[in-house]
Length: 318
Image (cartoon, rainbow, N blue to C red; front, side):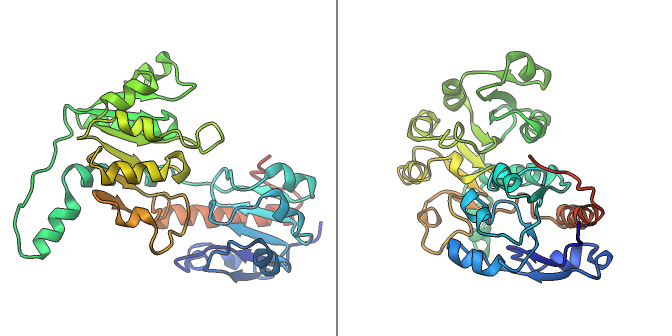
């Protein structure tokens, strides 16, 4: 197959892709970086029509079937990471497009999760603001030792989060639709039903893949079941949570607070209701955004292009 000539690098918010990857190994490849995110399909098609290769940064720009069908020059579509539910793999295959992933680290999201949990429990945002205003120790935080951590989704990331909770002396309970008592016990957790988890947990943290089944897994009923002293943390995917229901619960003081790194719309537009909700700690989807993770992403993208050019595609997603 002919070598790829024209690569589009999408949604590079920090303008770091060409700085952190070994792109010098591909001197014959033209590389064009786009730092903004487009939402209009016609504008996306107009932008991407000339390219035979595209590197997508996670789910920032989705590639549904309709969009893929309108990109006849595309030969290789890459996603950072090992999977991307925002790209229609079947449609790519039907149009003769190779869809490849890259290596990644799992730890950055675990670290962000615990950064949010500890910051909420110890009231870092309000106490930092008070300190900068000339005040000293204006409130009391909450000790996590002896509390209950509720993990929704005890997979690769959920298990790592649970282990840290155990190290801090927390009781860990877990639920997902396919989780068994044996699997939970093997990780030192107790499998409970969904209603019990939301009623008993002092911290609920979400670690599910977004799917039709998991969308809205946390809604008005789950939030109403939580303790008024409990925190909700979401570093997985925004649509797992019914955001209007969460905002209403926060405004009514039905839960103590929420730590959020993912949203129903990204980038989050100015004036979004979550920005004015009380008792929140908000981050701009930092879970995977580290130098080490990006180096793994972009080295993997270079490898994928080299492999495609050699006629031996790697890490193909079907």
